[in-house]
Amino acid sequence: GAGVSQSPSNKVTEKGKDVELRCDPISGHTALYWYRQRLGQGLEFLIYFQGNSAPDKSGLPSDRFSAERTGESVSTLTIQRTQQEDSAVYLCASSLGSAGSQETQYFGPGTRLLVL
Amino acid sequence: AQSVSQHNHHVILSEAASLELGCNYSYGGTVNLFWYVQYPGQHLQLLLKYFSGDPLVKGIKGFEAEFIKSKFSFNLRKPSVQWSDTAEYFCAVNAGNNRKLIWGLGTSLAVNP
Image (cartoon, rainbow over all chains, first blue to last red):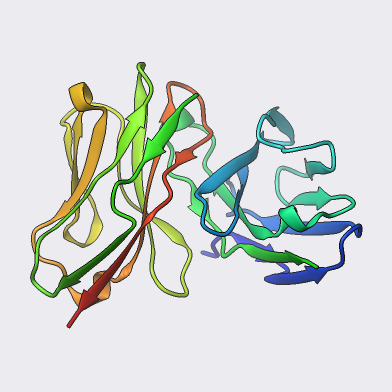
């Protein structure tokens, strides 16, 4: 079956513009996660969805960042008024959702965002 | 705050050498521990994980890791590496029922044929 897919694979934008990043999880996975990896740093958790609700959004760095999920499927991460420090690889992962924190998270290829 | 430390940032080995990559975490309660690998041009994928039971866990491609609670460690090992093991290796932890993973900075492994 298909894995986690993300689009676009690369995005170059100008400082101050808004961007939307999309994630399509594995079919049937009710849990979905967003992480980001800035150059030279480890992955940072951003937000977790269970179904369409987000029980943990503690990693969103500012109110410029928001995410939604619809139909227990696709998720969109939106960054408003992008800043150069937002440049990073944004990774999406999904998991079954029924076995809690022990579940394997399956990762997509990421979206590489560059803010000029 | 929880954190994960990976001691080796870059490792270079010859084929057939033994590998041990260190991972330490800071959290006093129940943890779930993961090693992920990213081969060149590919997605992150799970190598192995530990959440309970036998502290020596075996994963794909001959990798294993040992959870030592008293040392807050979860080191990754492989007795004999191959060129195809060249990749970036990440240790990650989540605490108790918390789903969010806390990640180390990763270790870049290069295996020379």
